[in-house]
Image (cartoon, rainbow, N blue to C red; front, side, top):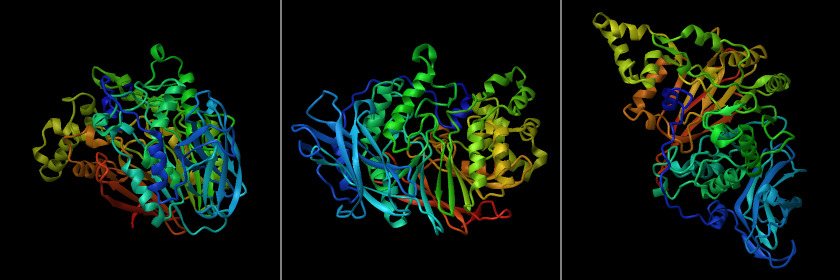
Length: 593
């Protein structure tokens, strides 16, 4: 990778191993569609038919990947499905009708219309169902050639005074690593907890080929990725989306809750930025802009997102009445400058810290870009909502760690492990006279950001955003994914002033520190990190899960929910930690529940 091994270990993706030779049995797409109706407790209609009042006789169709909804507003919501003809391969357009009802039996329709499934959109259908009432739950379905899709449930955004908003927040779902039990658990809890929306912060899918990233159990689990290669062309990305969406647990999630999603890097290629990616080699994989365009097209086809004039512009806002303004950002593709790399600053005598710090201080290095930054500032300034919530990809909190730990991860034997460092700290506290000169040097070494792919690698851009929130006197809550570990940070500006808080979710399946640092005890590692990193209040470095973020007028709370395993369909789930922040300039920090 272009970054040091430390970033591989602590951030997310180790170098891909050589592709393995594997056999794969194709999933039957109808099975997932059936599960989406039956397992969710939804009345299941016929998934296939031949002829009827929707088109030419003799055409049998299937709603191959269930249904989904997303990007809700107060009066409308995007509805999604995919329609495939089973008994013809002529690529003909397939006329579809859609219905929205106020009841599960569809006795009272409140909206309906027609659409077309076309080969040019991979036979995915998206409609913007308008004329709905604010803050209302609805049922929806599609019909074509006598076939009826499984039904789905959705909800519009509320207006006016809102008592509560509850978000289920996800990130990083690598199909071959394990089962999507995290999605399944969210569906189980959705009814009782009354989630308003599912929020996906990116890495909805991964681009790697078979036997590459985190695929050691793929064959045993029947989860070898398709196609049998890394994703580069449009057909590749479409086929991978289709495989993911055939998963019954993901179908259930989409059928149960409207989703608001942004992409991170793996929807395109690892460690993407506006001009390229670590996992893109122009000499063998062609023009990056062409690959990015293909990935963006497939993402828009397969996700229930509202499309705009520019497919690369995905930042957008959602207002939950007077309670919450949700600003979904793109820190990855549209304006990100290339990541810095510690390897570029290493000399025979160590890190060239002067040159490194000078590059880190450059004001022209950005994550959001001018246009998106101005859009965010204008939305926050105009909003009177109690909570200003940023739905975005990468960690914003300051995550500096002692440089000897950084060097050890980069080149074993040149520094110390986290456990060794903790032992030296304990020795300094209990018997300082016994410290060796080498141990003194370890303690006196400076701390450096561990993840230059996060906001830590763009400190001026972070300072600009935090200054905006502080000057506007807003209650700022930042949501993040990307790292596969769970975090909670107090957000401090460069002067050490408290500005807001950050809740960061673990992954759906992608491995965290437990995979990259197998010799570290997870509980001890998390405890050490919270001691070493001042603004870090909570960490979990070994479990897969999601967050529930609940906003009321008096608090914004996060509950971290983890599943016991992703290697078996049988699992248990626990709420492992709960933290909150309170509104008001003097209270914008993390406190216990």
